[in-house]
Amino acid sequence: MPHATYFVQECSTCGRRLQVRVEYLGRRVACQHCRGTFVAIDPASQRSGSHLDQSGILLQRANQLLESVGHSRSQPVS
Image 1 (cartoon, rainbow, N blue to C red):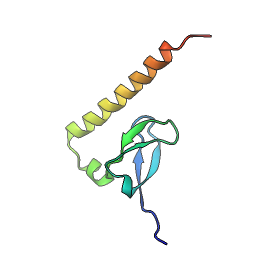
Image 2 (image 1 turned 90 degrees about the vertical axis):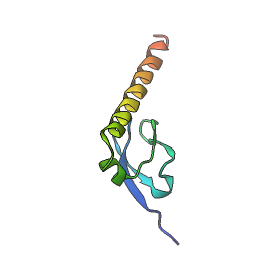
Image 3 (image 1 turned 180 degrees about the horizontal axis):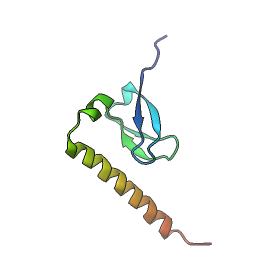
Image 4 (image 1 turned 120 degrees about the vertical axis):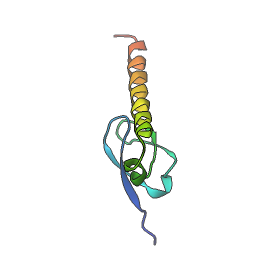
């Protein structure tokens, strides 16, 4: 029986380190802890990525956090 191969990637929303199956590379996955979604990226390509790639990742995380704040403000206070 073949064993699954995993790599470790941080969730772009909460920052937790997650084990992601190699077969999910390039696909959108969800964090088990915060339910934030992100694209599974080869860790080796992250290290050698350009400054623009890193800026894009940070911008995406900032947008997700802003959206979550907007949703919590739109809910009625009890």
